[in-house]
Image (tube, rainbow, N blue to C red):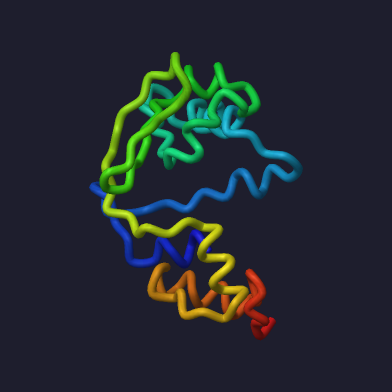
Length: 141
């Protein structure tokens, strides 16, 4: 789905890279490990960890939260008018984002119910969900 979402996107360098290291790692995968890998691969780079407010409030519950705090700049994406951030003691930047007022849970429920929710995700992502029968869509494979 990430590859389908990234199709056609570009950033300042003209490309978006989909990195599957967490999948290839196998077993449980933790952000602290991923940030350590990225830091070793890109020494001196500022690593940004973009999170929604729902994930940001849980940072203290993550595995090795101090390593996450040390290795990445936390960026909390807010929907318009939304507030919140990490627990006390976490430095972070705010980013107000033009995001749809829908959660991933809402999407899963909508797909399972057969509702038309494809306009809330990029067309390629909708196609992957339907083709693979994810979220109760039935699919073709």
